[in-house]
Length: 91
Image (cartoon, rainbow, N blue to C red):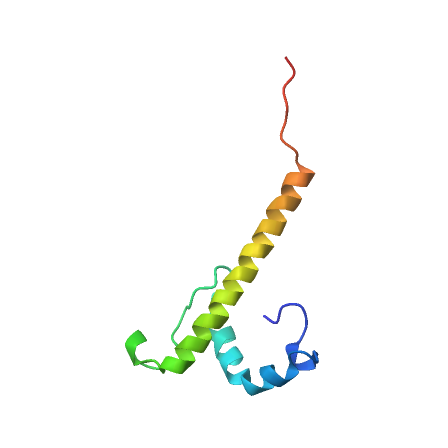
């Protein structure tokens, strides 16, 4: 699911990615890549029993991922609109 290249090899992201790699790994396992929803919780138990900091980090990544999905959808819709302009009827 690494979008736009591997962050491990990008100079501006390598340090933070290594530092928080376990969180990104968990995120990739539990996320629905189409809509950005959690499919599973990372640990046993209900939502209230999940580690707070882990869920904060995952929620932040999910919010950023959803922004990415929305921007990709907007770009695709604009592309479709440019390729198929609305039909204008002659009078």
